[in-house]
Length: 120
Length: 281
Image (cartoon, rainbow over all chains, first blue to last red; front, side, top):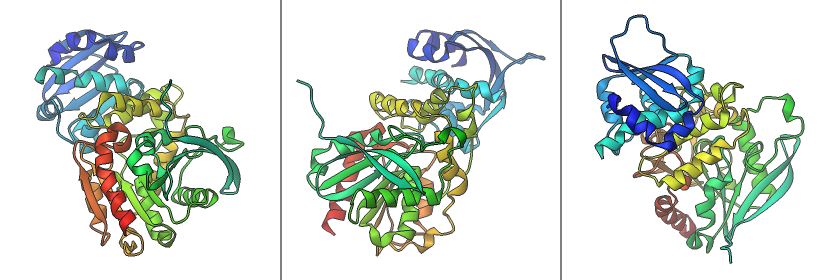
């Protein structure tokens, strides 16, 4: 799923436009597996799979694998359908610079739910 | 020729909390007054489908106002010197003042989210002045699970953040056209207004301890909640309703936090029978 984010996001101008000013690397955790996602001007430049040693990132979004699997279902069930739905469940944790996360909230939500198109 | 909607918009000058206000409201139809309350950080455009529904307009005078600071209602003079904060008291007195100043006799009040919360206080304080209450996404309290102050921050675009927040509260099954219209209203909010409303919703307006005293024999209470809402979830609505004898609960399949705006057709299917029941009482 995560490895395919670049094609899913970069091929969708309706997602890219909301992250046009974003140049950041963020950490995405799917259970025990860590990914570093680097965004340049709304396009995903690369996705690297961990484990990592002393790598820098701006913010981290961490949730269990089962949680992301529910989130990526199409359509997702109530309570599993949005990043903040996971937050209210207490199933996702944010760390690091939350200002950047909030500044690109809409972009990140669209980016993270892009894999749903694979389960249609 | 253009298609012209039956909605008419006007401005009313009135005093709220001792200050002069210029309030924008829209209305359509004739009959029993139905006063509609929009959600935090948005405006009366959320009610466009109810205001355009020919079946409803035959028996109802539907009125939707923009709260002060929202939509086309201005903030009061001197706003630049203060932080906007909604409270149970200011919200309740605003609604009752607008009903009075517009000459609405025993209106039905229908509110969503913060509006779904305040109808519970209206049920406690003003039951005899109201014909019925309809709470959409009605919860007695929602504890903070995110920090809304980020939406009023010079280094975060408040409109984009509020739009992102609102977008996720909608159902994945709702039509994209209406979801993005709903998000757009959020993107147009003024700085600090959404978070000022959420002060009532997430901090001051905890009504859990008082709702047991609501008497639905005086004023019937309907609580309709979309199943995809995680802010005021079906569980939250059912928990509140369990404390209120006679409250009628309906969980709306496939709808989210903004039923009237994100999926108007599906919502009207739930609302019309409720309005019929109230009318026939």
